[in-house]
Length: 262
Image 1 (cartoon, rainbow, N blue to C red):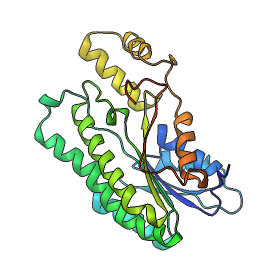
Image 2 (cartoon, rainbow, N blue to C red; image 1 turned 90 degrees about the vertical axis):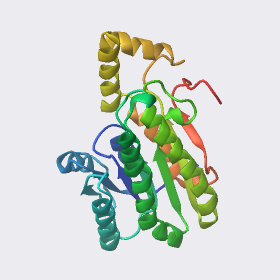
Image 3 (cartoon, rainbow, N blue to C red; image 1 turned 45 degrees about the vertical axis):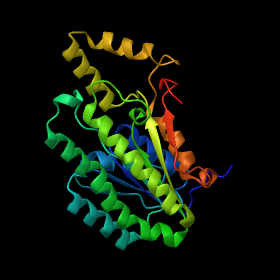
């Protein structure tokens, strides 16, 4: 099985912690040169310094707010001009605030659409020429199991994740002939700051302790535990590699079996 990413360059968004940082480590361990993107330059540098970098690989960081589309595109374009094309893109962006769909202001939906889908489209158009020229591209969207089964109290997130999934499926058909695959990897409940925040919110909203909320979540996971970020990153690493070349346009849950549909 060929998992070797030597000579490939990867952009990992949201790479300063959690799932993003784990994906950056996984790709670096497979031989890729990694560009880490998030807002905090200090956290990014700490992650970059922890990555394996033998054979003269140059890991770099881009500190930018992904919600600022103009700054995001400019920063990534500068990286391409300095160091060359990126072959792998882990498109990982934090989700909208929790809350019921009916109570969300229209502006919350508009902001989520701009931050996720519009920014992703802008970044795609910067990255795609290099992928096409190389005949090798892997676009991996970190979405949510809500793509398959909406999650209660995540109204705005459910909506935008579904939009992203359909955008990706459309791209998979368009870009497959160019050697560019597009897949969505759907994390279940994973030990990240995002999960901690969600547990806290649900505890306050429901008048429960955080331990009670966590135990309720675990009861719905067949393997009876939360995922570790590294387990999610392993799936990303496979899909990014030559071994995953014939997997295109799928929604892959990494959720311990908790999603209640096929």
